[in-house]
Image (tube, rainbow, N blue to C red; front, top):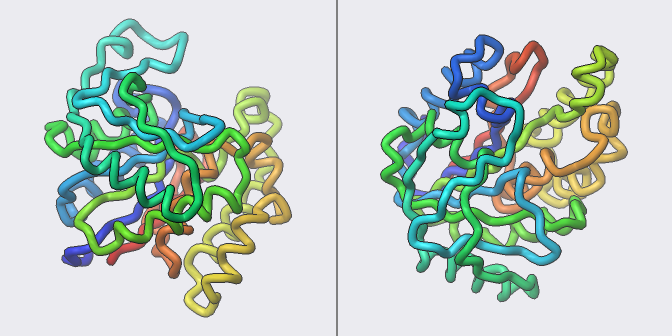
Length: 267
């Protein structure tokens, strides 16, 4: 990995609820990848995390000194509700994010009561188990509009020369109804994974071409089968908007028996 002193921008699948932390064999490869990324990326001074599990009408940013955890899942073993990840917040960085968004005409609010959801504490427990890096979480917009999330990412480009990790936590496939019913369309899934990799990683694409395609992701082959609702894809749009250039696909492997991808940009 690069030893750059600037930002790392990483989009990851975060797996199924707390299962990556419960020894689930279907998450073994994802767990190994997240652990390795935490060891190989330049150590960030702070983390900005965009989770699929927080939506708001207007952007919201955690600003508490030590946000509590939100166990936003159900039906899992009792120990999954005792998980701890005592990371601190970062009020100064939260204000900087608010200012960066506002400077681009995007309304953003500081939120001193909202905690960290499992899209944050599950992957970060694997990446940085000591919980010793401050974290600020940024919400999605409830519109789930691709262009709006790319614009949000572009507003965050002021952070690219900072030693921060911007982590988009979602999934490249999220059709739970088809998954549990056994009605997955594997051809559609593979077509969409291949399309995403091309849009994110092709060095010949201009920024405008890349971002226009991602903004209109619904037109891609297999897209609506993979994402009947877009919340798990929108963190990728924020990452791609902030990055501007091509990514590396650093993970393409099975999670719970289905393929998923992770993408990395570094500065």
